[in-house]
Structure formats: structure tokens, C-alpha cells
Image (cartoon, rainbow, N blue to C red; front, side, top):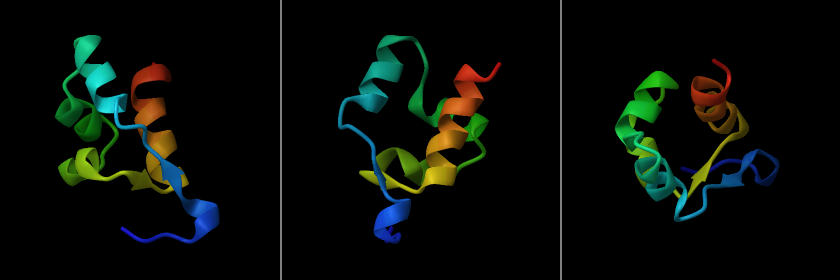
Length: 60
């Protein structure tokens, strides 16, 4: 995906592995954040997607 530079946030390569280690399946995280499952293969997300991921798990 291409976003303006101000909208790009890199997802560290180990982010999704870290979720797995905590017992959270990456596809479950994407679903809960209401994002497409393909998001787990993207190295960059936009700010709305980034916060959707965090709010889905940390905002409970």
C-alpha cells in the first residue's frame, strides 16, 4: 500500500510474531481491528490502521 509519508507507520517485522507469542493470532487481531487480513503481510500501515490494531487489543 502507498500512503503519504506523514501517514506511514512501519510495523516491525517481529510485531505479528510477538502477538503470536502472547497467544494472539495475527488474523484475530486484524479481524478485531476490522481490518483486512492482508494487513498482516504489510510492512507499512496508515495511522488509522495502526491505532485500530492497538485499540482493538489495548482499549478493552
